[in-house]
Length: 310
Ligand SMILES: Nc1nc2c(ncn2[C@@H]2O[C@H](COP(=O)(O)OP(=O)(O)OP(=O)(O)O)[C@@H](O)[C@H]2O)c(=O)[nH]1
Image (cartoon, rainbow, N blue to C red; front, side, top):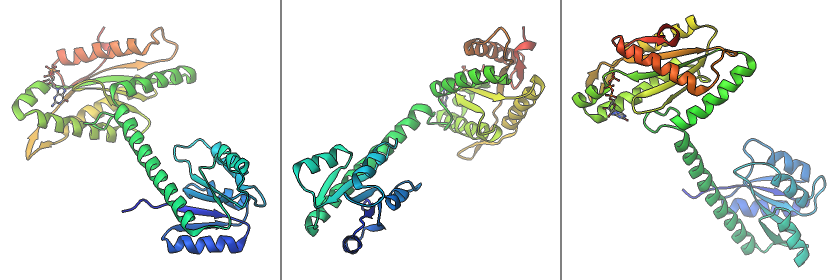
């Protein structure tokens, strides 16, 4: 399907605006009309604004040029395509319009063929812009999220963990920092195949997302290792949260191509209290890792807190 644009015609000359409106509608373009600069700006500031603007140079409220200046100050990845319309077609005027942020210029009275061609140029430019924005959004997503589980990847997670730590220190709030690792995952891969292992990782991503609140942090930091960070009042409650997650995993029916596979995870955690000597994320990570090691040593499928393992 052809990429479609919504056009705003801003012109205080009602007859001229009507003429262009009828033409554009005949060409299958969706149109909105404003008869002064203020009304035009209201449309432009809507959450889903028109993407192509045909602005008359001279209008009450704001002129087309003033609107250009205002629009170009808006920080957006999807700026509108602006065509200034005017009878002033000297080189100075054209240059001024373009310098103030217009993309193109059409002279009045309109030549229908030229107007149609210029709108088509705008449509093509907006289509390219939309594709670029889409590609950038997908790249941003790939840079921060683990493709398999849909959770944050290591780099993006640690960035957020550092931010959360600084905030917790400032606001004197407490956090639980936990690492967890699938038990006997090599054996699972060997017995059921690597794709089955991948399916387990994907299903774990769903379990973690369901078990934690949207503002808690969870990410995949290595092959079968995850990191969780959530705010909690005391170590007792932190223990309950992790126990609940451990149990949800133990009780979940992991399924791959009709096979049901038992999966458990071991957890190592530490409770973060602002003002304590240890303040570096890396130190908490190492404490949680030591506690995880103890969970593995004690038989797996366990939650161990660092305080209980030194
Ligand atoms: N399917 C799949 N397997 C992975 C992935 N990343 C790491 N693994 C596997 O995870 C396994 C980890 O094995 P080990 O480090 O020996 O640990 P384990 O078998 O889970 O044993 P414990 O941790 O001691 O309980 C290895 O076989 C890796 O190949 C992945 O993305 N997909």
